[in-house]
Length: 156
Image (cartoon, rainbow, N blue to C red):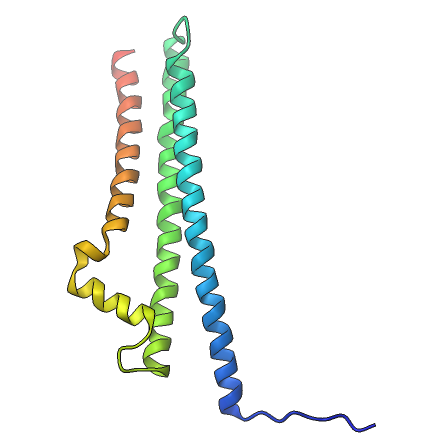
């Protein structure tokens, strides 16, 4: 029996590849956003649990153990911030690549990443509010946990 052979042009192969790659990259962004939310939730739940445990000891912990216990949230906050930054950098890199694909393929300022880039350039504060709020939240958690640890070193 003769097998039917499907002969595709190079343009068709390229278009299929680009469509598949685009869909995979969009899915990767979705997964990274979910991961970002998990990191936030897990880190802040961990910080709350540690502080709740440390501050509800009766009688209070020995000063050495109190200092050691207050160092843990500082490291959790730092690691959470670093993980968040890594995820954000990956999302931005994927977005920039998709935006370059959009310019080459559809041009004329079309495509979500292209429009998003224009919005960010036109009004950087409004369009990046979520990122600013997340940055401040991470910064304050790191500063607060570091301040609690330093306080324990100085006053306990």
